[in-house]
Length: 447
Ligand SMILES: [Zn+2]
Ligand SMILES: [Zn+2]
Image 1 (cartoon, protein in one colour):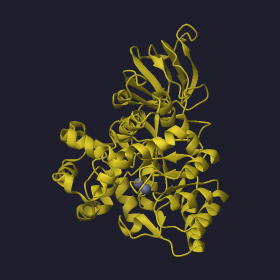
Image 2 (image 1 turned 180 degrees about the vertical axis):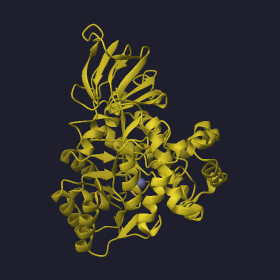
Image 3 (image 1 turned 30 degrees about the vertical axis):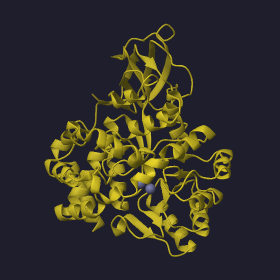
Image 4 (image 1 turned 180 degrees about the horizontal axis):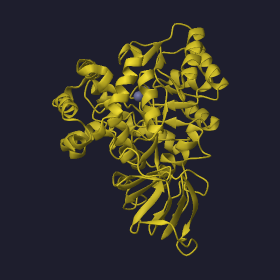
């Protein structure tokens, strides 16, 4: 079965229409010149700047006066715009495209023929993320073979997409919300450790500890993962779960702060998270902001970009699932989440927690094309400075992935993952919706 899926993915990847532009020309010498640089540090911008790229790496950055452009460099004019590191999405789901109901979406994929359709869905999602300026992303929940095949196709340059870190199926003690092979049911800490080892041996980059786990489960998973220098991201809402994960050494606290379950968290918990330096990825926007923003502007569901990105069948199915979006089960608790959304997010911002940005992109109405700038806007609206938000989207994200040597800032020696946005995100963070140029590893993917 798995082999057949891989074969179908390969066939799909070789379909000429879909490999066009997957692989831009070889990296070369590039000079991005004229615009403002935000380098990913919480520091003032460099105006009228030049970034020099040689192959896949950044070699120099500074003002035009300090950095002359040597001959032999292809110049990309960035005048009037902002250059910054490619953004890092810490919580995406490539198997989802914003469809309204999991209990309808996955059976629909099966009816189309999962072996061909699921890779197609993941390819669309990966491309959407990259075109939105996301050059690295973490996928936190997908069947193992398919997500590894997609990551491999991206790495090989056969599919346009971000550098993917993937968890494969998550470990949980709760009932399935996705099909069975999207999760591993935990029955004991020993088994959780064995499954963690098995996932790592298969090649995952991170482990996702989903809901319902005990302290002993967390400990077993974390110990097994850390033996291999693999980080554990946990899916958490209730204070006791956050406390258990924190104390058992879970590396990234995901969803904490977006609970809608009688927050705020106790001051002691927030203090302990901040003092431990433990990263938090709130995933604030996906229900609490996306729902009211859709009520205010339901036209967003028909953003023409979505139609362009998807096949006609997938687009029709997603649209049909959203016809009566207010009644979707996914938003059943959204009133309460909206009530608590400010306190849930502000308590981490104001306490000075280490915060990365992740969106749960792909969940209902939470499109890969825009989830990350919406998340950044929620953070800024709740008091995070735009400069700090941009470092959360870039440098802090790279730290959370453990890839700070290569990613997250515009500095000599780093990989040339650079985006150009129209406007000044320090003035208006939604300028991040206007990504005009995407460069990953020195290759220009957009335009
Ligand atoms: Zn989750
Ligand atoms: Zn998720």
